[in-house]
Image 1 (cartoon, rainbow, N blue to C red):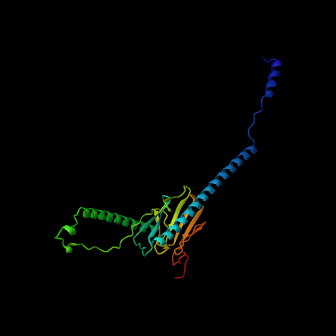
Image 2: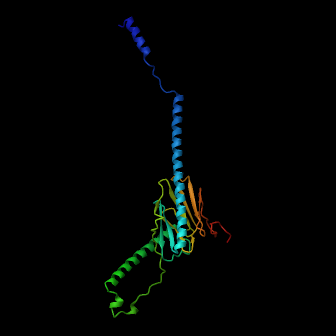
Length: 263
């Protein structure tokens, strides 16, 4: 049984204990507002950083295109810019051979098949040339050693124009470039194609006479909200950068800037 003195002591101790309470609705709203503000600031900073990388890559790519235009004009050699859309990188190649543009526009799939076949033929030709060089080095040339050689047995096949062979561009001013992680090589369009290339590799050619083919290269962020379009002028080699999507002309003739003209 608790005495009166003990009861007063217990009541006094209970009075001195701190009163426990939870967060009020206003406090919770304030905390949520602060968290939301911090998150929005972080997202805005990431978007700003992505746009900064996008602008830098667009500027560097336009400079590379202009450099190849000038380089082809001064050296008299055909250059091309190789754009690897899936790998997010690009590099330059050069050829001492004459390059002929296909007469009719091709779909990206047809162009890819043709290029694969040509690469296969180039590999076979390279192997045959290496074997012929080895045979000549051993002094076993048929024309030189076989006095019974019959020219009538020489097979004459269908004439095929020599395909231009492109080799890696070793100019230190333009090394292979890898785009930033937050930059996507979205598409590449040239009049040689019926539609833009969105996968695989695309090529932009720069000719020895100081001309290039009209081209539209699109870069974007991963979400596709920010888009930069690089439009190459075929006569001057100038590359203009637009902060928006520039759609290629579809159907009908166009001028050297890409604007539709009356037939």
